[in-house]
Image 1 (cartoon, rainbow, N blue to C red):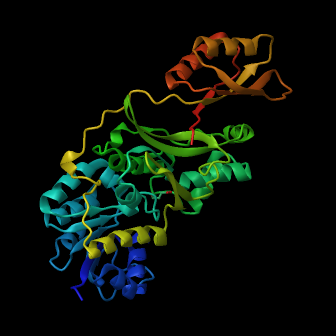
Image 2 (image 1 turned 120 degrees about the vertical axis):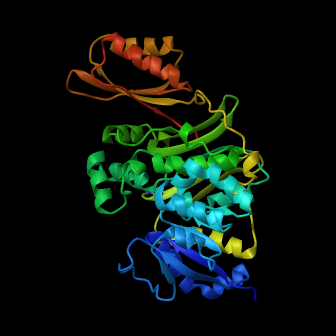
Image 3 (image 1 turned 90 degrees about the vertical axis):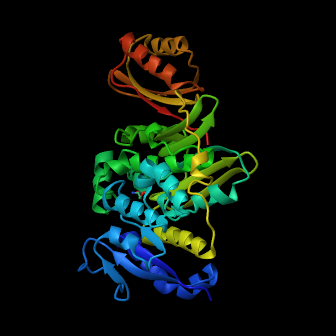
Length: 428
Ligand code: HSE
């Protein structure tokens, strides 16, 4: 039997304690699968006295994660502190400088510093693994890096923030406004300490940028992700989208087009009967499209102690087996600087507007659309008792620039009785 693989775990929150529990519960299974025992030698967290409902008595305690990262009796530094800067970054850099492998759940750290960390790790012969950073327990990094390595990836899509998916599905099922469901999510403890990370699309955008780097062989470029959160989604949008056969999801899409790399994380409409449209509550789903394989759909828990610790352990056991892959699936020096697409691929759009109910109002709107080169696919006007008429239009494929031009044109007609909402419809 080979020597044990020795872990130092920095961070004893939901994920860190989940990792400890799996190692304590499945020691024999892990040894059998990894070919050597996996043991914890030391742990680190801010508060030594806190009751974490797990036995830590057999492990050395370090109050400073940097000191933990440098310990001679640690082979793998497991970073589950979180945050792109501060102790997580300092300790990860220290571990790499000491030539240690790193397993991390930290999407923000890699989205902002992934290229530099990958280069530093390769220079030291160390490996960084981050399955737990994207879509929790779903093994999507492994699928892209290994299982689909023979494909040219066409498109990566996904719902990668369970909190947003919970909010949007709950708004629809309970007929409640955003603010009320946001408050519910806060009380249930679903929201990050800074909720903007969730509802502003930042957390999901970090994840998308990591998938795009692997899929398209480009340096991680979170700054180039077009981000829009769910804060402005109204219950009216959700109801009316449902009426037209769609659900609203905070959807990430990355694709390489003739115009460059498109990366966007934004509310989109998807058909209600598609796998993405059917995705309930806090679940995540990632859709991968390769030239040979076609479409692969992965669905599972995107957060939580067990699922995220499961992903950490997948990486740890791979290292125990001796699997040593480049961080983003190819040497860091060979990753290309991405050229960001200046405009997104054309797509159908959903327009929700309120018109003054007077002769010729709808004709004016149709004229503006025609002048902007936008063709109407379907439209619906709802019954109403006052002097303003709610109207929904689904367009054929068009560009966002054309939609923006049309929105300005609508205002100039003088027949609008409120703001128009325009949401992209993603063909999935
Ligand atoms: N806050 C995230 C979510 C999990 O709701 O999916 C951590 O990335």
